[in-house]
Length: 93
Image 1: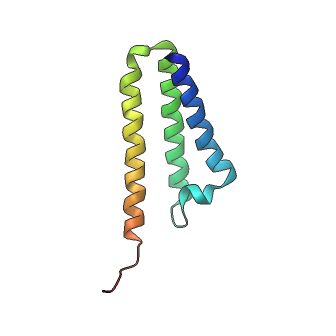
Image 2: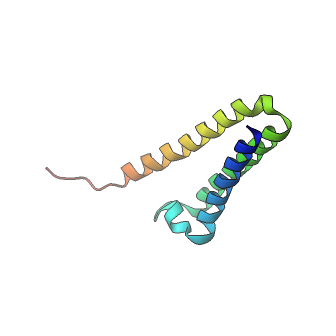
């Protein structure tokens, strides 16, 4: 189980870092503030490192840390969805 968790964390970490390195515009969108996006990614990377540590040294903490990370990602996705909804043009009927 520990190897699987660490492997998954490695993949997520590479994906987050790769998004910044190769195409930040696709990650943050046209109007999304870059500083807020980078802060969000930093928070997510720190949470992934916390999960990695728990997988190796504190397995009993792993379920709560994974749930917290899932909620964190959902919060960011919901915020992005709300922002996208707010910017859609009104349609006249």
